[in-house]
Amino acid sequence: MKKINTGALILISILLIAIAVVVYFVLLGQWHTTAYAAGRTNTVAVYSYADEAAQGTEEGSGEAEHKLTETGEVVRGSEIVRYRQAVEQDGVTYHKVNVETFADGTEPGDAELYMTEESTADLVDDTVLETEVYVRTPATIYEEPDSPDIASFAAKGTKLEVTGHDRLQDNGYINMYKVSYDAGDGKTAEGYVYGKYMTDTQESADAPYNEHGEYDTAKDDGFRFELYGGEAKDLDFYPYERTAIKDNEFCTYARAMYLNAYAAVHPEQYVEVIKESGCNAVVIDLKDGPLTYKSEVAKELAPTAYKNAYVTPEELKKGVDAYREAGVYLIGRIVTFNDSEYAKDHPDDCIKYGGSSGWPSAFSRNVWEYNVKLAQEAVREFGFNEIQFDYVRFPESTYEMSRSGKADFRNKYGESKAQAVQNFCFYAADQLRESGAYISVDVFGESAYSYVTAYGQYWTAISNIVDAISAMPYTDHFSGDRPWEDPYSSVKRWAKKAQKQQERLQDPAVARTWITGYNTPHWAPTVNYDEGKLKAQIKALEKCGLDGGFIPWNAMSDIGKYRQYKGIWAE
Image 1 (cartoon, rainbow, N blue to C red):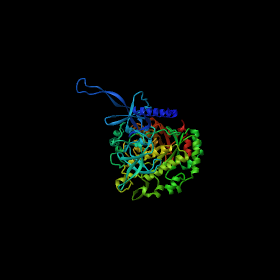
Image 2 (cartoon, rainbow, N blue to C red):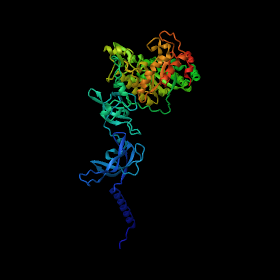
Image 3 (cartoon, one colour):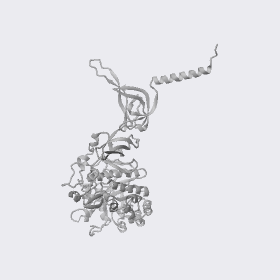
Image 4 (cartoon, rainbow, N blue to C red):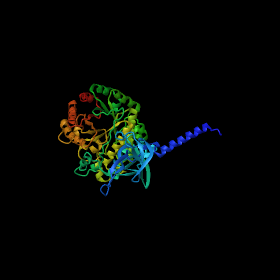
């Protein structure tokens, strides 16, 4: 009798058992893998079985039908377990899945769950299924996702082909889509747009935002004759998401002091007043036409400005550090589109009226980039909490220029002036947040009236985006019989209009207002503006609900005046 090989039998037995186990699980459809939820929006549908009454044609013929119905959603990119087991319904294949948590935070329970075959992917990079997006809010197209360099612009309603994306956020939304766009002359190019400005249908892209009645109030706004600044109804009112910035607490009520270039680098006496008064914020000039310091950004992009800068970066840093040590919130002021030094180097970026006007156009993306890169440099090198952009507008003579029909405003993308101003605010706010700083914008007092100004400022279009809006209702700028002699009444009349504009928005910016901090009127001072007259202005603002703080405007940063005003900064 032949001897049995025990070892071989054991090995064969093990193999047979293994095969049986594999066959068992395959047959029962229980083989599974790790997969990821994929879709065309930030959430993906999950289905479970439910009994539905079948529609019979004869009495008694209806039977309960076991049918998949949507039971919840998961965040796109979520890790799931996908089983081989699948069912087909109405020509669609569904795989059995295991999901830990739905998008709303609830747990699935004991239900047997399914997702469509298309909505599961083997790799996270394959979970974004959009092939096209539509521009809901006018969007800058960037050359790269991590750079402020501008490639182009996409107007509201534009359809863009999706060719990729930079990253999927934890909430399932895309940070930036890589898109193909029309580069002119029959050519296409690729760039990046923020996903937050996109939507998935032409209809939703074309529709004006009106949940708080913003469009209803804007569409009828206008002046008694054409100002050429644009139509309020053509601006965007979709609420801008103002997220808190880590390790940078926003100053919601600023008792601020303005510091020109000299005061910025000679801090001793100003710091003394700050400590004695309770002042909690300073506005430091970075560019008031001329640059305060020799910026590396200016060295590359505006050499004339670099050459004529006031001090070295080291000198400015020493001054800024002294103010920081005094415990104040740091705001860097940049005069944006009124820049004769940039104009000397880049006449093609300036409004042309006769010769060059010497005023860089708010339509010019090169000018946008220059000013925002200066802002980012200031945040990075000096640690500013916030950047305040001043002169975010076209020049005062814009009406005459426009009416003449002889001005070339360098309007490459066919925007109105108010659209250009608002679109700059979108761009600057996005880039500053990437850099870890807040943004404020200065506006003329006139922008609070119910029309788009000739120079492109319209209150709600700006307040809808920035963190703080800083109007300039100086008492000697009002019409009437010597309005500067009664600062409370003059400012109160204006503040009622401004607050009305604030109330038009669901989430307006903080209203932090410039007040008259100099003897008036400025062309022939006869009235001494002391602490009492400044307190009267502050009282008028707060009486009307403009309670985001104040900044006395004093071009000279007169330390004598600031000593007189100490009482206004007390808590």
